[in-house]
Length: 413
Image 1 (cartoon, rainbow, N blue to C red):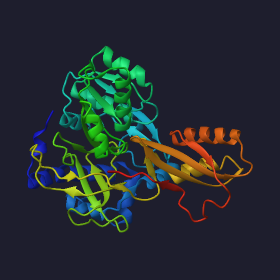
Image 2: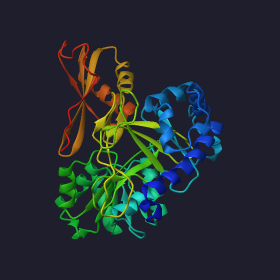
Image 3: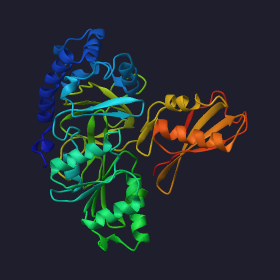
Image 4: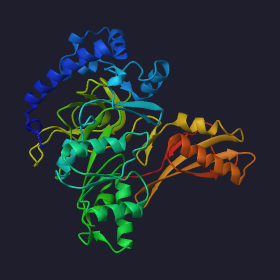
């Protein structure tokens, strides 16, 4: 499963990427009307973008752009590069944003990442990502199938049932969020099991959340090797750790730029900025997609022998959206919730973290207040943003008129 492309020289990698980029640009221009309009607005022809160095000439497309494009030109905003009947599945991510799955095997390209983490053909793997509407469960189900791993499609929650399932078939692997893996291991200890003594689990690949070193250490002290990956529902795998765990390698099918969030201009090597990605995928050719995540690239050698640059880590977010328990939360979504309740004057969403788990609460200035309003508000919040949160009433005037609508109080070590 390890590819020779992972050990290309910088010159050979640039040549390889130029080959697929030129074909991708031609395809996007011919088949994705919104991308063609972007080229025309920038006075560009496909022949103007044939190498990674040419990419900054194309304006960046961001998540908020997808929302508006899909509203104006449903279902995919003119960005789909193939006829819709060729798709295998269509998902809906928060925003709302529709995400296509094309016909290619391992469409999101995570099999390579799972191999780098230590998973091998024949490993039985518990997949604890959601299979409902959002694509995460299928992303890794497809990658595990490509790798040759039987999958336990557990989804989220039901901790004891997942442990029972893992024990019944001696599952050796896990994919899911790091916080839920920690919950599973804590519950297993309460029941008298641990990896190597009642559990066969030994290898984990995690994503969708931050992996602070304190959490990695807590997991590994229980006997599970854990590596992380980075990607999006729109683009698939963008980077992944090897067993050296010295940053996340960028696959050869991805061109990553680090740009100044304010100007969109590339920053010098080693400097932090927004991650902008272009992926070799003609089904959904999002050229120069701004992920909204902040990071930096490290091109120093890795002992594993892979030669691609590495993302050092995800350092935070650009803009107002935050990621909570693997799901993006946008201010407009919370506005949608609050608009249902005329009793509410203003709100503030607060994200905290306790025991390696994200916690969400919404502060409301409301009149009149009631337990019934709190219950309906929590239900609406869960319905719209797909994350459970508590409702806290505060005194009128507590939330300043110019205060941020979403406050992220989490810290990462």
